[in-house]
Image (cartoon, rainbow, N blue to C red; front, side):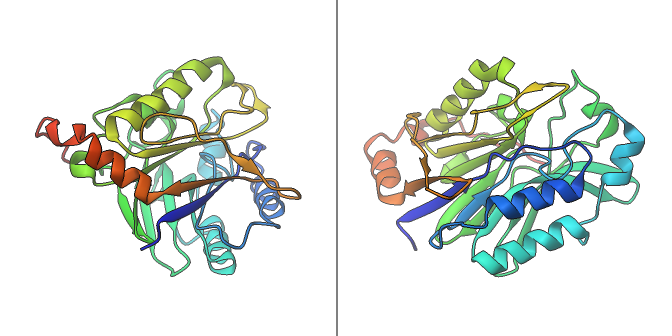
Length: 264
């Protein structure tokens, strides 16, 4: 079990609908990835972005055996890191905003975004997931993955019995709602006594601008300043288990929580 978890944050710009360009951008971004990185987190729909054109979304969607996940398997193995984020997935005739957690061992976990943004066409084009947030045991850490709009729903993200130590949130969250994004990340960290990392895309599209909104918070809701290594396009934060466990022991608010849990 490792006391520290080094997380690389890749705030990629995304060109809507151009899968090859987005994948090449990711490969260039991680070319100098620190060798001691444990986890690489990518934005929501990192390889395609979102378009309101249903036919185009259908064309872009892939199965878990497609090019995108195969490429991520290769990255995980090559760099000895887990890779988390979300991509545009297909199961049968339905398409999903599917989170992934790909481990260098070959183990894989998937989760289909539950809360689709009804104020856009996302909820009309995609199918919502039915499973609860998965928690992955990785290098001695319990890690949960939510996706973007899921963050607004505290019951959905509820950390019953301290089942997770870190909540990762890949997102396409525009600057116009920066205040909500920042404070929801803080709230989820405080109430769940867990680290929370929100990884947002960069750049802009017809829905807004996205720069400088990848953020990490500790279990008290205090921001963790990311380190930007020379020659690298990613930022790094290092999480400490000992500090987390001391806080949970010294201030055991989690033990007084109400005994309920969402079931799938």
